[in-house]
Length: 338
Image 1 (tube, rainbow, N blue to C red):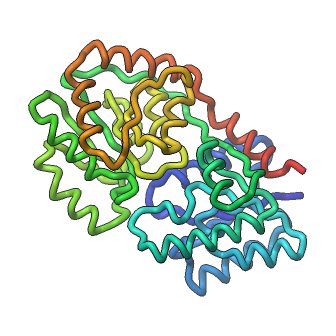
Image 2 (tube, one colour):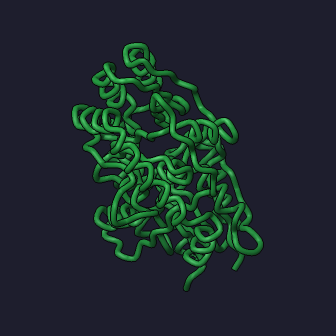
């Protein structure tokens, strides 16, 4: 049964879009047909929801990106009733996105719960996400298919150390907590660069206002060679996200031997340990505690031996990370398995 991959059309760089594109590019054998949909996702509007409905009706087997489909359970239910196999791929639970009201979170969670229960199969992008989704929806057969990573040359160490945070500028990625932690370390030598598009204009305004006080720069959204250069020039990735299913930025840093500090209790911890599960090439801190991030960052900045230890751990981890061909083969099997 031929598979169609229905996904949002990329407008800004994101981990979800990068995952989709890499999976299709490395698909074993002929890749699935892809349908990219414009729209104000996840809710969509009349036009985009009609396009989504048509895309689902045109195939008996659909790999459906959750950003497009998880808030439209009635469409999934209709297709399931006619016997279509809808495989729902959840990159991030809808209610976990930043900047939502409590009412919006409750409504999106309820819609996604219906979609998860109606889909023929449900995939998530980490074991952490699959477990969380199982608890919130009551569905016990959710399959985890973590991302792969492209091999990359090892980064060289710098003096003073160079810090990097990559992610859309908004509450979920938590750049303001990073700025507070950096401000607490101004007596130590370092440089810091933030990379990412604006997700929340109000949050971004506060972020820009705090850059000068934290002695940091913002490069805006970077892709391709420019983003690769940003990783190559880093010594430590900062990723204290409030919610994260995996955090591809973490494994992209590890592919270059760059350690990371990530948000505790998120899928980024799973990503950080994916190349060395016994000892993390970095640390996890509570994402809502700027003091904890500042303390861990200060330890790393002030202790050359600790910096060297984390770097050695990351260098070992980079050789054990799985590539995109392996990840794509796993996704293909999970989407087709009877």
